[in-house]
Length: 622
Image 1 (cartoon, rainbow, N blue to C red):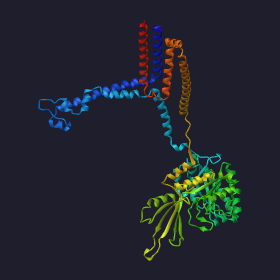
Image 2: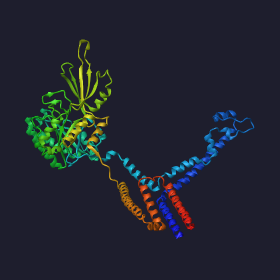
Image 3: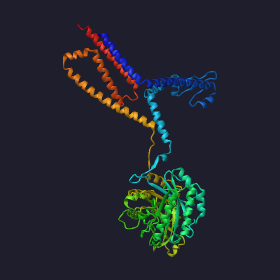
Image 4: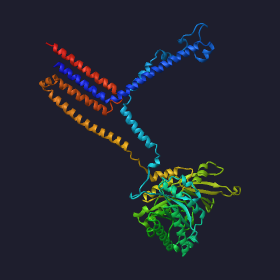
């Protein structure tokens, strides 16, 4: 009986050691190799340092007294010419002496041993390395390749991020972030109203010979050609019964589109009045059907509509049959139907109840005309330029007005606002009522203040990140189909407007990685299964403990249970396994595998020894 109980205990200890051994086999092998390398390296470096110090000390001891003082700070030479100084006399640094006497560097070895016991296993290191390699490969990819354009309000298609490239900017388009835009337009084919040919033939020659379209296509961006005819007189001369000019224009456009493989056109007429409203509608119908008929339904037809249209000349409800996208020009509000007024070029009033003209009133008019369900066919174009106003200091009469690009405003005004001689009384502010920035100063040019003359008031209106963000979010709230920028390149030298455009109209989508997904799936599956296993074991432990407590009230059962070695071994194994599982799940044994193994073995040996002692004493009892 005694031998069988002993055998059962030994079996229990042996099984437990095997379980822990197999669990930590990889970590023990790795840690053993690390321990051996650490020991060898520590000993080698200790012996090496000792030999270097000893040889150095011997050489210095044989040198002159002056040389020793110069080379060994704090050292002292020998007392006689024939007497070599001892090592203790030459070295006064206690730490150096300790490293010489303690050649194995026991203190450092103990520290390394403690660090070694906390090292992760090879399996854990391998898993970490795999995950890190995958994450590094993702981090090394430019984040812009993860960007996708947000969808419009009904998720039917992505929003349109549109921009005009002005021909006078040359080949600056090669530096555009075409991943940010999905439609760009070359500005422009300027119609000669008399014959329909381009007034800027050199510009069209550059467009035909250049690579604007191919550059955009390489980035997955559609490229259009803008067609301009500005001014009431020019528009009337071209549209009123000028069939030969219109036919030549159509032939030229088809040739240019075919030669460059452009994706369509953007029609940009200004000055269309009620007298040529019907002619304008007819021209749009003929142009649209000609382009789509000759080049297929994949060609785009964009039409820009003005901020002001009191007579509904641009009847988009009728034109929508021949136009894909309407570009609402949310700028040049200073050019009112009643003449030039001192206004920001793109005001957005803080309240929709305000009667003053602004972007909101213009957009609402076009939405009402087209229908709220089709608001996604409208995009709002905003300016990358501002206006500078010169007004009389007393009468506030407008003396002059000019347009300035965003880059020039920043370089020439905002960044030099502290130059009092150049801009006396300069004040930079934000007009929340109009949602724009202002820069004001006084102009003393040709002003004689000694005669009581008042300097000219100068005011700049322009947009920056704060105002543009509000306008971007307004167009999203209005359920428009996208945004347009007039003109691309006007913000050269500054990247924050482009970043703002990306933040508001793009979203990040992480690419699917099969290896990373597989690792995460296995990790989640193991953790989920471990939770179920732990819950089952906990319930079993609770019911077994309750059953044991209830059974112990019977003396015979108590005697039978505690005399049965198998019962004790079974209970010890069960509760030990439960303790290990629970502790491992809660992270109690993290980094302490070896101490845990030693503790379990020591506890098993002590239990076996105690049981043997009690059994022996019991056998001697009469």
